[in-house]
Amino acid sequence: MRNYKLSWENLIGNAETANYLRKTISGDKFPHAVIFSGEEGIGKRFAAEICAAALLCENNNGEPCGICESCRLILARSHPDFYILEPEDNKKANPSIKIGQIREMQSEAALRPINSARRVIIIDGAELMNNAAANCLLKTIEEPPSQTIFILLTANRSNLLMTIRSRCMTVNFERISAEKIRDFLIMRGVEGSEAENLSIVADGSIGRALKLKESGGAQLRERALEILEKMTRKDLSSEEIFKFGAEIADLSRENLADFINYVQKILRDVYFMGFMELRNPDIAARLKNIKIAERKLNLMIETGAEFNKRIKSNANLRLLAEAYLFQLKKILGA
Ligand SMILES: [Zn+2]
Image (tube, rainbow, N blue to C red):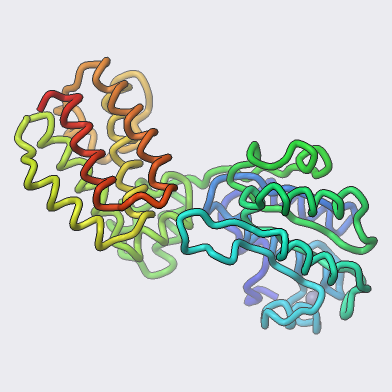
């Protein structure tokens, strides 16, 4: 059923992984607990939903048929045997999955599946379970209720409890090529040159490309580049830093993180110019004009990493943005 949204052909990239998953489902070999590991925005959640639909589908052939009752219930988000757990406070600085959510899920998992032969539970952002929640889940994974399948999604597998990792099979998802991201964006109606730019800046993540499109984030890279150019010419004024702080205060924590990541990637390109493939090949000419001594580059990259951590705290965005730029300026002696 080609127009059914949840089908493998709609997953961008990771074709081999998709093939493998399809086979384990049709061969009835899908593990009872599996970790989908890989960066944000590369299709883990979508693949997990396809798996769930296929596992619950009445015509079990590795792919949701799209027409049975189960497939229709999944699409309507009202399948009683399909459960997605994610942080409740996703918008906050430190989202987490709490023990209450795990307990609630467990009491449902203790019952027999209602509509299908089994039940599928997706835990999106599994690394965001606090310790109590993770230990609570561990008990269920150690002695899983029969017919229940767990799919844990994580961008940070090493942050999961060792004991959970060791009890789940891990499936790795890779970054998506810029070309595939570009084609996907064009298919979604994004104009050619914008799609091209976004696909480079998105760094392998469709989710990031879409978010950037929404927030005008491609301009953030331009802003990062401009600011670095000015700094190295020693003509970035304090007023301009305060202006940038105010701009960021109107945006989000994520935007500041994006901005810092752009600065980091630009610095990385300046560092490896001539030795490694550039992360920002489209602006190579401008990158060549940024001259920074290696020692200073190192310090600047360290500063970026440190501020990336601080963004995750509740610190004031505007002050963070300003402190970050003043720090870089100081390192450059600008
Ligand atoms: Zn079906």
